[in-house]
Image (cartoon, rainbow, N blue to C red):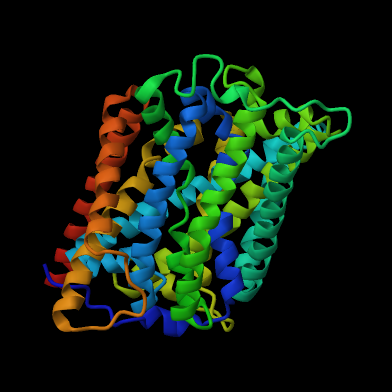
Length: 458
């Protein structure tokens, strides 16, 4: 197949470069630190016991490899289409368009889920709060932020991420003090919970594999760094710094938090439904439940903000390449793709209303269809990096940022993903989700190819 006809960095030159390096770094951290950690980590512990740490290590290695691969391609060619453009260059325009539309579809659905979810969590703190009104306010506010320009978006996202990072660091510090017996009148639980209640791996490798599926999906969203790199002031330096610092920090935050949770709360405890609150309650910190709920709200709103940005830039890139209506590439005076932003947020308003009319029915069904999108995005990104790196080496192109020990590390990432795909296929709930995503992907690919042939005839 022929490579994508889009000129290198065409969209990057039009969108402007107002994002700062510090904002890109914090965006990368913020995209990986969400409600999946604050609220969902307890489910992983219950699934695998203390051995869930191995699940997080495996998933963390995979995320680091994928981010390094994306960083290699983004440093050479910063573009808001990111992995969609790289897939088009490596495997042809149909592959690129399919990946772009699939990722966009996932994000617009997730945006709606995050708005309703944040409103619902906030209502648990203030029961008199209308979930419908709060969700509408969230959607409106973050649409306005994204329409103001990337500089304002970046600053909002920077401070959202700072709040989450500070909360995690404070949590780890409190947990360490508790374990060391430094808290007054609070006895240390010791490290017995790592080996008691059935041992370190009470459910064996099956439990570790089942938890791995949960953990991989929790890490989804880190790829937005490659999308945002196109609008940084110095793309090559910014993406390099972000990839080098974000990856290991994600591991520290996740592994550090999980180690504290496992040490303090037995994996058999029902308190793991809210694991962070359970630890803070054990440390006798007043208002722990309310504090963690508010942090989770911030995490969801931060993800909503970032996902709206990512969705609008992806569909803008598709329009630039002729894979979406050209009107979506229209920019305002401050270089914001206004139609792309509105198109990306419209479903959020509609689906929010539907979810409120039919609670717990509409959005879960839609999320089930696109829930495995990150697996396909990461797989095709690694395949694209494998092809483009070989192409660059043959052409003698000097890359500003490189994958370690190429091609062995790339193949390691693909091997881990292959293992995750097998686990998903043999797990009943995940099998349905994966097959639904594959079916949707094939439909998008077919429509994209038909549309391309029709344009060629015209």
